[in-house]
Amino acid sequence: MPSSRTSRPPAQRAPKRPSAAPPPRVSPVARLVMRARRAWDRPLTAYYLILGGSLLITVLGLVMVYSASQITALQMSLPGSYFFRKQFLAASLGALLLLLASRMPVKLHRALAYPILAGAVCLLVMVQVPGIGVAVNGNQNWISLGGSFQIQPSEFGKLALVLWGADLIARKQEKRLLTQWKHMLVPLVPVTFMLLGLIMLGGDMGTTIILTAILFGLLWLAGAPTRLFAGVLTVALMLAGIAIETSPHRLNRLACIGATDPGPNDICWQGVHGIYALASGGIFGSGLGASVEKWGQLPEAHTDFIFAVTGEELGLAGTLSVLALFAALGYAGIRVAGRTEDPFVRYAAGGVTTWITAQAVINIGAVLGLLPIAGVPLPLFSYGGSALLPTMFAIGLLIAFARDEPAARAALAMRQPRFGRKRAGGSASERGPRRWNTMRRRASAARSSGER
Image 1 (cartoon, rainbow, N blue to C red):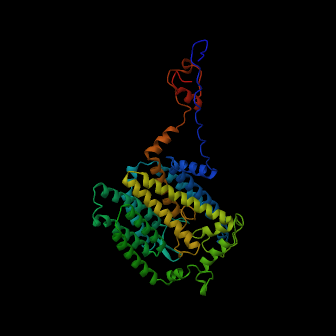
Image 2 (cartoon, one colour):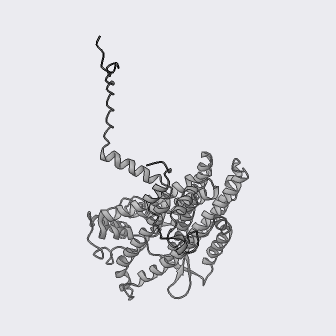
Image 3 (cartoon, rainbow, N blue to C red):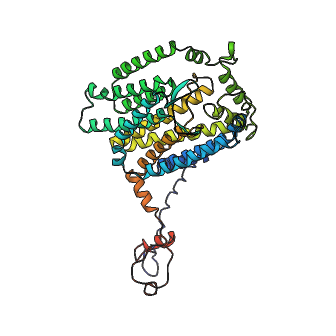
């Protein structure tokens, strides 16, 4: 067989490698879902949702309070911006409380639990003292501070129950006492029923429902068995039934669920006109300030039924935006409570989330005609400084807890400003020209000396 001149065997062609299969094409929807999942899993997601969601709700609430309260203020011979200025003052004070609570350590929050509870109980007792307590709309649950300023102590009872209940259950969990039913219930349930009794003396059943929801939320987070839930729920329903049966006003509110007509003696006037406001809003509403129902037809347009005015002026888009903000706030609170290893943080975050979510559901459900009118404001949105101040402090609690997660702390530490720091190596002339710390330069520095 002839060979080549170099006496080398003929070169053999290398076998052809099979071409790699192209990666499967990902649809734009699946790619968007993947990006959303990665965004939700970031350590600072809860922090930004709580901070951004609460601020957006508060700002939008200020706008709607100004729009919904102008006619009421003019009918009372007051300036059109009267209620807005008071709400803006309360929001400014609330922002300071939010900032203070978000910067306080967890130990200080726990230390404030008992003083806040004692202060709330004292204020609730003072409400029933003649000459100190003030009746508004038939309910004796206000204290006059002089002039046009009043305070509603029952709103601070919510914050007191959350902090004190979370600290109590956390200490019992640390001592491994929650396996016994008596330690699960005592003294949490008796103290809660004491608060409920003081509030019911003033006739405020809406706030008692919120406190009951907070109690159930704390018990659920503590791992209470079903029989304990059934027992506490049975007692609460019995007391609620007695309170409703002994009050014709509450019976009328219960009968107005789903009403589309004011009925005899206009007992369902408020609920029906709330439905009228929502129905006339359409998709995008009639525009800011263009509500018709706030001209004397809809009672409490800037407080309990501000969501109806929002639906009339901003339409379905506006109401869905408010619902989305509250849903994001609730999700972030649940995430903070579920990811922490600190028992107090878990119970306090769960209690605050239960409080805000339950109150929003009760208020919006009443405006939609799905629930009886309970007379509770929409958190962070309705007019009322007594409700806004403790709620913003509670939001500050959630922000502090979200910042305290190890992954969130690390992420926030990496985002500290880089400019203005002193660089090692003496003065600027000794260090040489300044080099900007860009992403490309950091990536180049991370490579080894032989890498290209």
